Length: 421
Length: 164
Ligand SMILES: Cc1cc2nc3c(=O)[nH]c(=O)nc-3n(C[C@H](O)[C@H](O)[C@H](O)COP(=O)(O)O)c2cc1C
Ligand code: SF4
Ligand code: FES
Image (tube, rainbow over all chains, first blue to last red; front, side):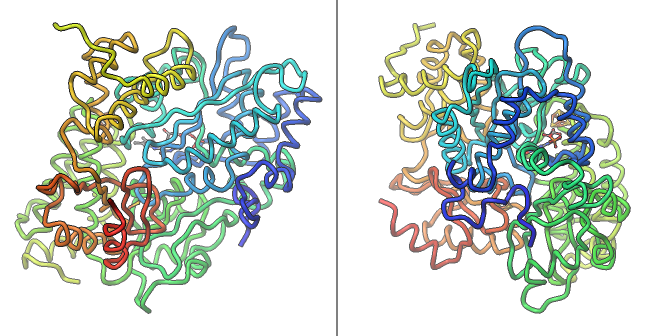
């Protein structure tokens, strides 16, 4: 396995301490920047070379995102880390916070310097108490070591970090809902534009990145963008944390090079459990389309290959299902989730997710009607593209993909009022 | 409207809220409302009364309605009494695939209540929650601040036996 980037302290005893982090070269990049006042443009150029793409789900190039922050705006700017991690199947940021929190601190500091922000917030989901304590301890250790604060090491550079704890709402992972929540309001996504780079936290220029994206930055700058790029493949640089869950022998978070064949990742995770056959894979978290085994076995684990296979890398949350899985039951649970988590702001999402959840539930329980399958696809299409945030699309995509690939199972439920598996 | 009573928040709670207020710009005290509600809830056996929410509003200089909006939006706030131990069971996809239905069944049998209910003696509340972000260790539950992972019926029994 290649624990080269976010998991580079994992083999150490107490990997979360400052000493552990220093022993793998931690904070060397930050100290160099403080000393040399590295040109922000050269940091951004290095990130562009690395082909690091946002690890929070959308895969937007991180270097490009950083270049959008206005340079000549006076006053406060912010860097915000997204540790809300609520997409079903995803649990990698939790392990960065628990096992390598200093690397995130360093990544946020570098981001702050590069974009002229003297303050960073890490939005951690409220359930993550242990990860929060680890990260908070890292902040305090870094402050005590003079790595955060005012005029850090006499450089004239200020940067500090605080944590904001959520309180249970998946939608707050959406970046503008997250900002609302940070401002002490309910987490309802904002209309875009304006984008956070011009109007973000408290109306100030703000860049929001995922935990894994930010934690990758120090290693990229330490070894160079080209090095990171070559860990993976063109346009898909680096390693990636994959949370492999479901019907495998060794579920876990695996840091592997981008472009690894899915079959190899499955093997790393011990293969399908109980000697069963693979049926289906959701490659990127519950919001990404499901893929049947034959297609999944032919793809490699990177943005481009998974997208060609008809799904998305998303947050790298690989949910494995064996031949005994009832696809109707799985979709019913997912549709219930999106209905529960809709913030209710847009009619198509608020009403549509309820429709979807009720219809799939009905089919699961043998009360489906012949016309329901077409109605479901129609209802999903009416949500897609008609909402303020992507939660609406996220609710629609599973429905469409499950029916596309497993229509006969849904049909069987309707015809025979029971499950075929 | 009666004057909100800030004293309902214990001195310890107020001191803790202050540490959160200090994380935000001085004119942005409202950002601390989520922490304040959590702290208020913790001092009151796990749930928020209207009077407590009003106290939070007064303490942070917010309107009561703005505080209620937050308290009703987020799932971790409880607006009604809960058992001494609130057991939050994840039933989302990765947990479902690893037997969360059996976990729920076992808990319901052992405690004699259904999801969403509290035992008559007020000791336990059983709550279904969405993905807890620990999916590779499914099935997962959370009690207070602690996660319990790779749950089995035996493990559940041991956990419950260990709760006061
Ligand atoms: C409903 C919804 C939930 C999301 N949840 C998360 C999340 O938990 N963590 C995350 O990093 N991004 C999440 N995102 C994506 C963010 O909006 C944003 O794109 C991301 O944090 C940007 O960081 P990145 O460019 O480093 O990936 C979510 C998006 C949506 C629409
Ligand atoms: S799409 Fe759904 S979750 Fe997103 S803003 Fe609209 S109602 Fe809220
Ligand atoms: S699905 Fe249960 S913890 Fe993620």
